[in-house]
Image (cartoon, rainbow, N blue to C red; front, top):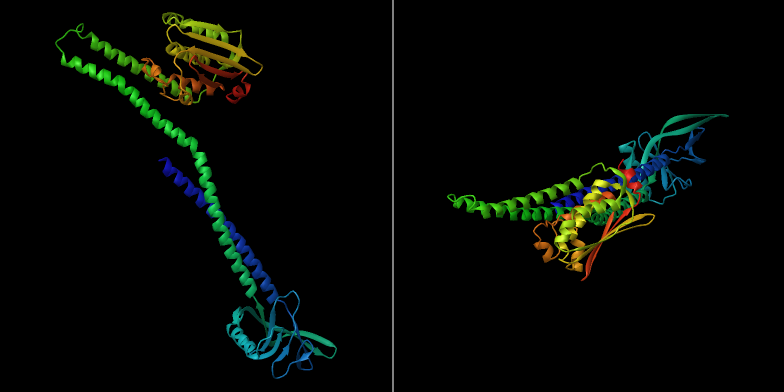
Length: 436
């Protein structure tokens, strides 16, 4: 499921980036194309006047003869172009060109343009030319008066667009190449950041799967006990309850274990669910003493020596959650401190933090197991695994409470003792403000 979601996310993101790149490149190409087309059209539309004096047609000061008159000139800034002047039958009258071509090529160009009218393109040699057919403007000189009018002659201007087309082709190829390269680069970046972004999700998913598997396993044990002992009762229906009290006791213990496990799961779910915390000024040392008092008889039964270093300390926190947290660590110490061992509770503070330290003697937790002791259902060694009232959820619940209260936990273990060091902000005003 996670792998399919990752592929789907990468595919959607890559497609989105591809669409953006394509749109950007289309805009760039279209804008360039329209600009070049407009420039070419402007060059084609430049007007040059013909002067007719005394009935003679002249291009500039040159008289037009029966054969086409060739004028070699070009206007700077107008590109590479040539003009052909034709009559109303398409007959070539004048060649105005700085481009060296055979007269037959000019005649061919004039014929093609005249047959197609208006505008279009024609290929001459290895060059491509865009042309525009428009009525020629002439000047009639009668004495001293000059009258401009439109005669039955037509000007065909041919503009070399070979280089501009090559530029557009080069631009298109460049955009395609850059687009492919950028898309490949973005794909790698998307894959990298998708994998990084999904790591917490993958981790949470794996933890959830492990949680379901572990919860099923933990529930299976008391259910098996209840089912097996109930089966024994069914096979001995004639016996009295007193005779079968052993099986009833086993069923009761199985039910109690299942009930304890379910209660722990519910506690974990409640803590993980978002809720309004009730922060107030709490006297931490007194809260610890109250929790220790509840375990006084149990510590005495195991002959555990309890040492306390609890100066008067106040902290801005949620008293109910802190009380539950203290109960978990004190219960943890009671379960795993060896008979005749020692348990120490220390409370220190500075201007910023309150430090709460729990130390108990007992079996060492191996270094490779320390990072996992806050995981759900994890019990680090044989002593912890064999404890009948241990579900492997206490420290997981404690971790969630610490996160809710803005605290932190460090754990260390040696052959002599195991230590849990909890730290809390003294005022925790930032956290308090965030939940109001």
